[in-house]
Image (cartoon, rainbow, N blue to C red; front, side, top):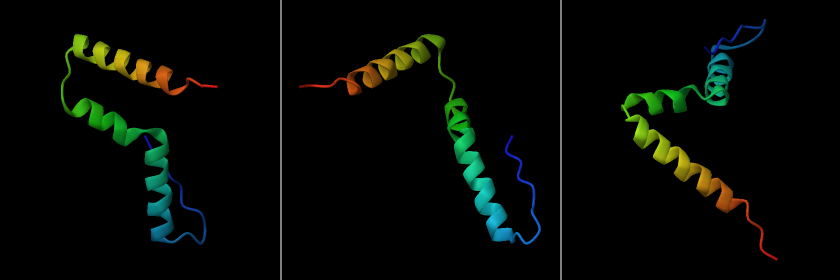
Length: 63
């Protein structure tokens, strides 16, 4: 849960900016989007495997 405490002199705009930044860094929106649609466990494993392969392929260096 993203919690932002107000400091003396903070405006409402700066508080909204801090809150938005905290939500992004904690990955709350990504988590919500993942849970929005049910995925079968087999489908989830397949996508995780695909993601691992994509990351592994991206780290290769040629030279």
